[in-house]
Amino acid sequence: MTSASAGASLKRRLSGLILATGLVAAGMASLVHALVAYRSETLRLGHELDRAALLYGPAVTEALWVFDESLVRALLGGMVRSPELAWAAVAEEKGIVAEEGERPASERWLRRVPLSRELRGVEQKLGELLLAGDEAAPPRAAVDSLLVTLPVSLGVLFFLALTILGFLSRQVSRPLAEAVAHLEAFDLEKGGGELALGRRRYGDELDILVESFNELGARLRSAYRTRLEAEASLERVLAEREVLVKELYHRTRNNMQVLISLLALEKAGLSDEAAIAAFESIEGRIASMSLVHRLLYESRDLVALDLADYVRERGEEAARRAETQGRSARLRFDLESIETSVDIAIPFGLVLGELLDEAFRNLGQGGRGLVRVSLSRLGDEGAELVVERPGGGGQGGETGGVGGGDAAGDVAGAAAGGFGSEIVAALVAEQLHGRLSRETAGEGGFRSRVGFSLVQYEPRL
Image (cartoon, rainbow, N blue to C red; front, side, top):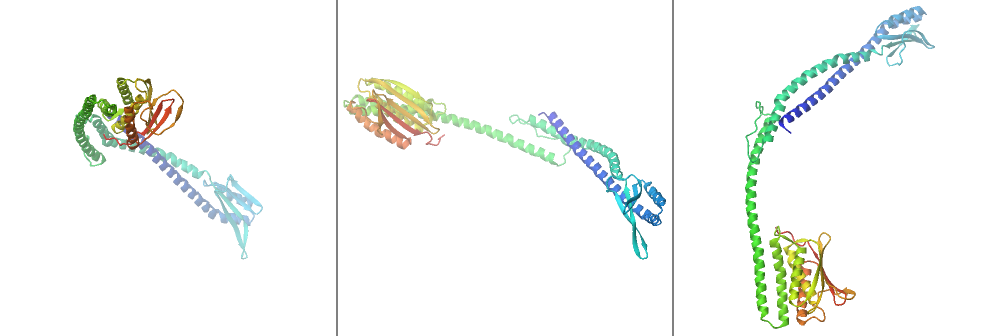
């Protein structure tokens, strides 16, 4: 909203408020004046009825006493000629004997005056004098008052509205429009002068608002400069941290590759099959951890990696290694993308490596076959890894662990598999907080399932 539209909007709202309030006030004042006129006319009408009763009551009594009906009618006619009286009548026990004027529709303005005469000490009741005032007089007086006071009230209202609007325009709406214009031009980067209203200082709410705004603007500019400095410092720290973390992952992976190379050199001088198998198992475990650090090094945030990418690369690496040992297997993946931290990825990788080694050993020397690997979520907080080497027959039941190869496997593979079973069981139970199960999958085949939690650790970064 621009400063001009803000001032116009405020003026319209103030005008509407003043006019609405003034109309209500004028209407209420006129209504009160009309009610006062109505009440005054009602009291005056009652007073006139009392005066007529005192004035004509004795004369009507004497006329009834002498049974002069013409005199009674003459007296009643004189009464109704008064503008305040609309009807006059004389009633006896048998009913009305004489009346003048228009009989009222209701008895609201009816006054009953008993007529009696004392005879020999005994009060003789002669009848009643009935007097009715003009019913239209009080409402007529109220309407006349309203017709007079309402135009006067509206004229006064118009004059006051113009005066108040002029004052508010000079003292409120224009200064507020200037304040809005200053707010629109306010810029934290470019700064700007202090807000000043084009009027004399009164020390009122607007002046206090201006002082508060100027103080707030100074604080905001200072906080903005501080934030820019903090952001620049934070960006430098984050850049340094990223470099350090990448260097850490890179050096860790390089060190592990050096360990693998040293183990390969030592293995080359061995002739014992069991020792060679042990060295190869150690190389595979180091390779599992090294792959975690490489994927973290290549990840976008250096904190989480995708287990699906890890499983695919680790499986292909294990297949290439098995081919060097005379085993050939086709890998089939069914992987769901699951991101996790290094705390879960390292024990997961070790477990996966052991299960893949077992699957390839299960093929036997010179064997060929299929190895299935699947990864899927279990709800919002868990996941399941399945490594399967299908056989040729039906399925059996759960055996509760990871074995060291089939009965025809070589002695070195069986020895390495026994130690691998202990590693897998320990990692699944203590670090992955999960459950490991083993099923037969046809004749000579097996299926290993690992269910584990994804929310064991709080984020480190």
